[in-house]
Length: 127
Image (cartoon, rainbow, N blue to C red; front, side, top):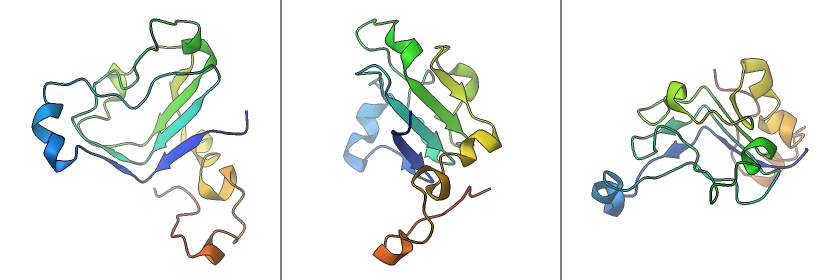
């Protein structure tokens, strides 16, 4: 699979007007709406609003839990507790080498073209 979405160096936090509500509402990083979706969250700050399991099942569809590719690497913050994440076949914590495959430099093959657009980015891992 050579497509997907990568969140790298992001802040996943509650909006000011949602902070109180987020304490009583379960919030997740995502859920497998379709088979074979891929989402990577790495070197990001994840606030306490995210449920410890991180990922929500789609309508109790266990089959999708095997076909998706959801992964995390080097996240920090109270919502980034790896030990409590879902135990799906399609979810795992990345090693540094695996995470490097999802950087701007590797995943979208940035050999300088992105800088020419004026969009700020970090080519590789931040740590």
